[in-house]
Length: 424
Image (tube, rainbow, N blue to C red; front, side, top):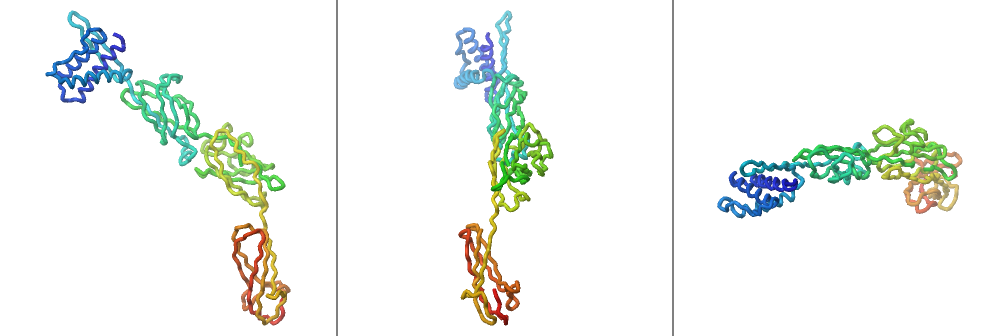
């Protein structure tokens, strides 16, 4: 008999064995009869006996049960070919030949569980995902014959796949978002009837990214300007400085990651994010979203700082060119005020109640910005505040600028008790 013929008989008998375990109403004699009939039916096909419809007496076993068993055996053989290790013997002697057949389950399950090797970087980050990693399951170490595929879900787990018992080899075919492709081949021992789980960790990608740009005012490049780079995922933050040309880069060939790492005092100091040791063969920035913020210093004094902005690092060895970042001079607000009487006179007489009209002209305002203007009256000849009844004469006015230049008039009504003429 061929190996396929032996497997056909052995699996048919295995089905009857499992059927009997699930149908406890059948006694051992009935099961023996079903096994004998199944063997004769299958051997009749393979050896040409022409008795492939042999049956037990329906008084012993009902027709319905026999129909179910014989049809079920054929289906079981078809569905389980290759899942069992099968064998058989024929014992020949002076009497009738005796056959012995056996089927032993020869498959188990393999699955995979993936984690991040640096959860402080990857957890709660939209850039990294454990979902979508694809692993091939191979029958040999050189990974030529793929027998199954494992795909991770959002938690890094895969469904179990059935493989032959023994050792299989697993290798990543496609890395999930934000992680490096793992090129290692992992052996996994699978026992028959059991599930074996391979646990692996993926390394977050880093990127060799050129930022932080030219830093200039309208006329010259600004050196020694500090910028703070902050991971929006972990909060890790480091300072970088522009060089004499107003430039900075996180590339290791600009400044070694290992040189005064994260000192942030000069443009020669290296920068490195993450918990691993600085490595000049890798980029300084992990996949993440970073906030770039210009800090106040002597070099940018008198300038308006650039508002903080975000960058996304999501590709390996990619240059993020921020171009030229220009600082503009901060506008200074100029104020010119003219105080007169209601009639336009600069001099007033003591003892007379007057209304002082203070006309204020302002320049350098930012349209849409809220301002508060406070004023008080001065005595020109004494260069002193005008005080009446122990209080200085003052007024305030709150407004929202509708243009860069504005005029405002403040009316101050006072009873001047001074006995001499005063000049405002």
